[in-house]
Length: 142
Image (cartoon, rainbow, N blue to C red):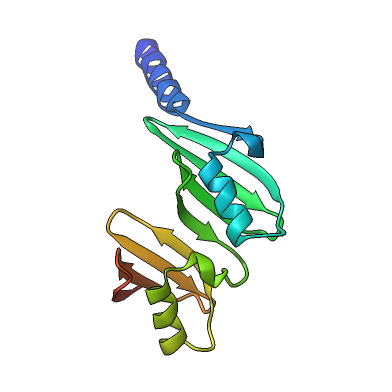
């Protein structure tokens, strides 16, 4: 019984050691990500940057003074943006922005996420809309 407990403890320690988060300086971010922030979120300060290494995947979470959180891949390409306020239209693909403006004129986009095959936006009323990679509307997500 003691041996099983020790093996299980060692297994859990190995699994948890694979995921590592480390607070880093904004200077340690990929240049592409800092350029993106300065272009689309001018005037906002980087409050915290976190480098996360999960198995073979490296990502960066960046928290801005406005409360906006951005996530970048290891190359500095953004794949997730969350905010309490409306996202700048410059960060939303034009076809998605046009769809939302046409179909939900009184709402704004608070979140945007890029996956392997889709893009998803969350509107100010909590509604999630799913689009393909080209920005063509697919469905409303629950």
